[in-house]
Length: 151
Image 1 (cartoon, rainbow, N blue to C red):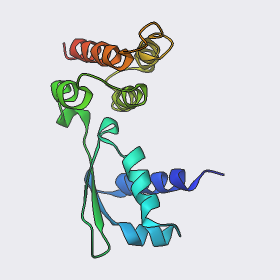
Image 2: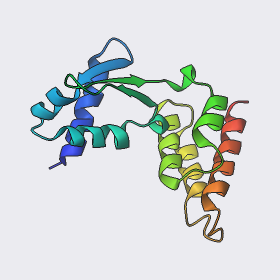
Image 3: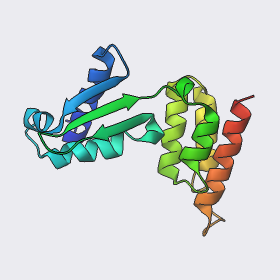
């Protein structure tokens, strides 16, 4: 049986699939009541499953039940230069790099084979000799790959 976080994530994804736009608004407290959980559980799911690395931007407002606006940004709407400069920066963790790769695959910018090859190149085992600056090297590799994808 899937965990509560997976169930909440799936519910939000289904809201996007049913929506006419790439923006949905939810009430944090109503969603928490629906799933019989605390609002902090909703916050956890949003902060870990709906991140900029996965193509989501979240605006939230506290008080009055707290509404949350979630925007899904297609990669066409956000050029790769912006992704390289603003999202990756000088350092990136393996988890965040993999999230970006998953997004590029989902948006059909790269194929499954490219996805898997790049994932291996960015893995800790591939960067095992670089103990201190592994995330910096990972960011450089990913940025250079994305630059090539723009051509």
